[in-house]
Length: 324
Length: 281
Image 1: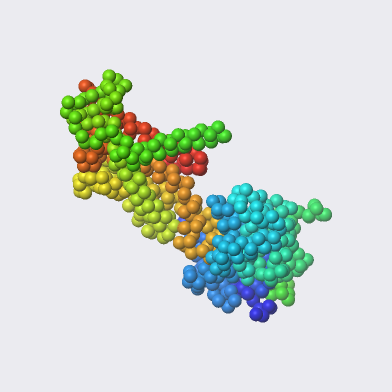
Image 2: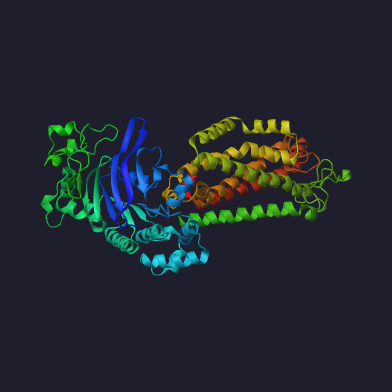
């Protein structure tokens, strides 16, 4: 297996939601690559299409959403064309999901023990005893030393941080190639957030797993991601290495986002982004960010910018920046 | 809140004990009944029960043909419980299956099933059951069939709405994301979460099924006339109610107690299991 080759290749992905007021374009032509063992952050505000993109990779787009075009190639196989039976062998084993709220993603009526062991039995065909040993090791890895007591508990008996650790253990249990982490730290407090992130980073390095890290929190993304893709209104507007995004952001939206992050050392720099996110049913022609952009020009109104490599390994979708 | 819980559990305990007593009586009726329920003692007709002016020979008095009411009431538990258990069980089986299919799978099939349920609900249950018996003929099995045919909708409707809610929950998505099949999700994720609801529904359905058996027997459409049943006893007792009230009142009390016990059990279970269920009924 070539470590540098692409594990996941998303190409021109478009996902539409038919609504009574028209077609909502949640994802509108998204393309990105993910290498083996790489962590890509998908950053953007609510409704930018981050989560739907993540779900599409497992072909689990919530109805009535439809994947209208595009390809999701995982190790050269297009996930979107697979039949249900073949999909089931991809889900869990090759791609795993960590969700926002660990309480609701655990079944309330079963003990933790049954929930984790079921997955191992289902996907790896292990016996009860084998599964138990693996689960104990897994829980030790996610920082739960006393696994015997925890396994006998129900989800509601655990703290938020513990639950998310259990979900992480579940996600990594079948050693997947890719983990989709959909805002995994939203439901926990700031200190636990950092622990969870460090934990994911640690396991990711050990197992050489790729992670698609979906978040609205740029600071958090900087702690775990190798690369960051900034999404706006269903499109990627800037994609580059984390360092470059933070040190030399190019797209006006990325710059505005970074200016809007509170910083303790320079409180006066905090600047909100004016206006609202655009209506995804009735997108402006040309650049979607045009109405809120501080630097817009007349060409922005008519020409829709595409994602281009402006500097080495630095992709930006902006009419003005591309000319610069 | 705590006192409510204790009250709830006391409710459950008491009604459960009463129910258990009924089941035991129904099963052991041939052994504990002092007389054959159809044995006629003409010279002892219209004997009053022991607590009025009667003697201990006929504990709860006799009817117009001199049959022992105590023995007949004990035997009367059998058709009632049979219809209650068998009717409710198969109504649940059919209703839950259709409810899950219509809630979990395709929207179109779901809509078809729900429109069918709407048609069912628009038919008055009493008239419907009488029509069914008119077609099927009288007899214990047919009463149970009538209950099943009429009451599966109760389960289908509630189960569907609960499944629609459950399948959007994140643990179902999580199950899909680990590669579980549709059937696996229903079995391992949805059904266990339906169980509290089903326990409550089943208890309430049993009380409805028992009252249907009593009602049909009362109208002479239930069990065969040779078999003692609470409904037919009440109907017969009413004809000589002015002279000897016990003929109708004693089986009526037997019916009231078991229906109350089942309703309290259902209520108690509902209070204990899930406050959200209060909305459903």
